[in-house]
Length: 249
Image 1: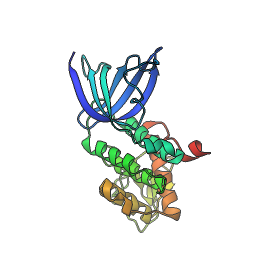
Image 2 (image 1 turned 45 degrees about the vertical axis):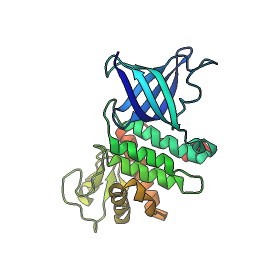
Image 3 (image 1 turned 180 degrees about the horizontal axis):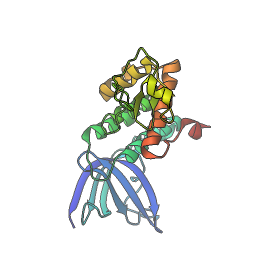
Image 4 (image 1 turned 135 degrees about the horizontal axis):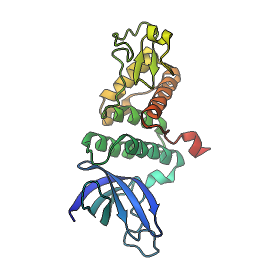
């Protein structure tokens, strides 16, 4: 059985059978991989508390083929990001980040830029900051590393070059803006998206993660962007991200 060693972020840790866990890790060199941690739920286990989500770990597993479920032989904690669990709002933001990466990636498809964005995103979460905005910026930025980047330069229905001076809408199903004429004819759910909101999304997509903290969004722009990105994510993967209201209420 080939031996695989990699560093990565734990996205998910699920109970499996009577005493085991299935751990999903996102690696910069291997992408999303899964491994079974045998006996991880027994009182005496060599894995300790290392298998919790959000942790940065060094992982060693045996895997017969890339498609097979690997068996974890060793996992060492590099960074726990323990402060994430000390604040419910921060933990919700971290959950949204890891669940987004898990949902929009396929197994064994490495994307170093997405991995770097996830690490930086988790490191940026602090109770004294606007973690909802940080998560929104992460969501927009990460979409730019996939084939799901929203289209704003032309109408996603007819291909006409976008004219920001005219009213336009955002179609979650089509993944971009819809011109005024196509919007009048109807193309399914359409959301209002102002010129300022489009500019904000485009800036968030282009800036590096380290520079995203420069961006601020308030009022109607914030609301429009949040609504559009949530609806678009649901259209892409068929499920919603955990909401702050669900976790903190």
